[in-house]
Length: 371
Image (cartoon, rainbow, N blue to C red):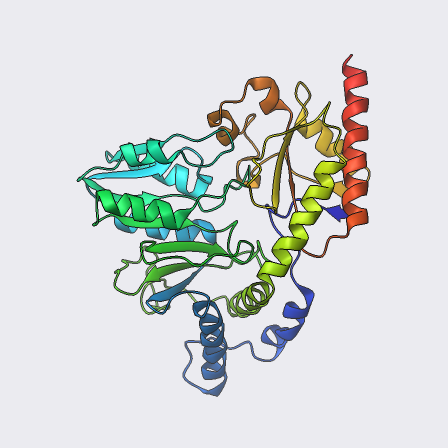
């Protein structure tokens, strides 16, 4: 199998999983327990926390969650209670639908327009900020087109207009992949383990220490009272390891994946397949369209050859058309044929070429059938 849907999820890193197998068999204790086994298990969580904290400035802290969606929701619902709140039309559904829910509850919600590549239109964003704006959330890397938003620049520009705004970013498709360092104007940042070789069901909200969080999951007071529930020790421990590993090799991996993406593009039948991703998009994500055809049909044809790609966000795959690509201004025939190829380090050039050749073959065959 050649797996090229890594923006949906990644294969767990086997070395990290193996390192912590004993947590499922021997060191299985509840980290809230006060006897020896529980104390040792708690230490494992804290070591993982420290590994992730080292990747951010000193004035931030980590709240472990059950994934990026919970991290986004925690940030949004804590700081979207008055005034108006602003996001973009290109957000992951975890953010977009949270804002829609708040709109239903009576809050004034504003959505910034997108550029053709899926990035946030800065002028549109800033035009929505006023003295009543309390919260802004802008995705770091668009999960469908791979467009990279300069969240440091955007957050600074937003706070020049209103310094009291709390600025959040969904960094799920950027963390461990895009070389960057968040600046002081980014207040909260959501990350997820399973996008970088960790396990599903594990994520975190990175937030400034000065910001208070009211929990919406109540119970035993874990995560310093900010997120109750017995911790996912296995997932958290692996998260720390894969995050550390990805950051140790982040620039090398970035360049490697950039070459793989370019190799795919170079072998693509450009007469039949259109590239939707911009030139400066993340090397990890490539948005395409076999215009006039059905992307889902092509996806299943490729599956017969052992090639796995996506048709867009896995979290929104039940909808006929991509909301984000529609907001980029594409017509229905382009939306129908939408495909997403997403890479990760470790894929070989031969696998990339094979996958691309099979894509070309499937598109050509389907076009012939469709007449």
